[in-house]
Image (cartoon, rainbow, N blue to C red; front, side, top):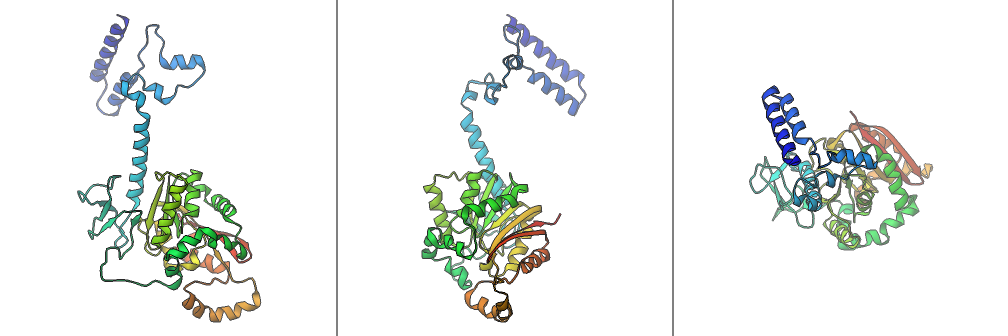
Length: 368
């Protein structure tokens, strides 16, 4: 009888609030307050009062326990919803690499991409992009007759052999050039990237996903995008993810050209590129693209080699660099000033760096 009396009182209160409260925000607030008021039990003690008496906060699930019998098993549903929202957040950042307009669902051609989509469409040029092991968002994807040869360094990393060897000794040998080792590199990168934690990070030229997987395991970011031009590198990355039982809820694999990044302008919080910039066909075009996709205050962290350890050789390197770079397909940097100048020219400021022999790790911020 007490329960029925309290229900009647609440019903009357809701009706009164609907009549008395003015239209707009005040009325909604009043109704919500009435509906949200915790029902008292037979002893007249509310759930929140009971929690206060015990000195403990009730778990979120307990607050909804009386709503419906199904709510007690709602955790998996909420986890699934969270995972789906992450995927949708990821897809909403993707853009056509041709015209940079956001991609939409290829099913109804208007709505935003969803988790169920296996292909996306450019809202402007109508080009289709599909996902198998990874999203292929290169400009020439889908071409049947046209083919394009990239510089030697790029083509080398597209081979199955180098992709297989990269994490099985190839990358570890960089320690002879002054690289501090993978774990130390990751810790150094994390220090630079602290202001962007909780956002979205691209691990550009990710190779087999060495750092991509570390970023996912660290849980520093809501989404990690493992990006590379090499199909075989991304396949290796996919294999390592399976071997290490890493959830892909916070990880997206994307094939793309570093000089034509398939992301909406100003949508990315951070970009990491370990031992990569010297392999890019055009560092200037690549850094300009990085600057475009970073939000104001976003951070670019990279590492590479600097060939100034033997000063007497620098004049000769300066003369021969164009020929060396053309033959090898790599870019030779002679000082950190060149990297700073490149970043500044592309709108990235606050350049800082750490040196050790040929090795340099640097950081720059997108100007606000």
